[in-house]
Image 1 (cartoon, rainbow, N blue to C red):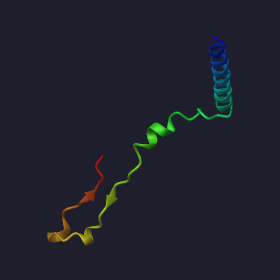
Image 2 (image 1 turned 90 degrees about the horizontal axis):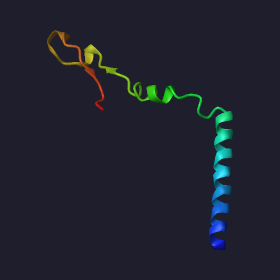
Image 3 (image 1 turned 90 degrees about the vertical axis):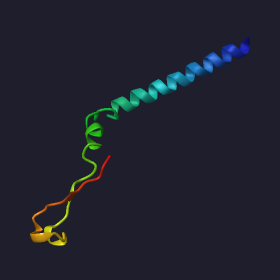
Image 4 (image 1 turned 45 degrees about the horizontal axis):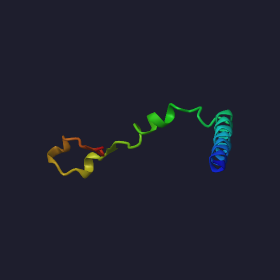
Length: 70
């Protein structure tokens, strides 16, 4: 029975430690920017344009752009 009291007291001390770490993280601004990570994944890759002089087509009338597929 004394082991249960020991386990409960140790788990309460660990929970208080995690709560203090969370409060410190919130006060230092760890969770302030919640918009940028969601937008960053949308603009990760840029469209690369191939110059017309490198394309071997009649009269270079076709423009080709290459994109990465997700």
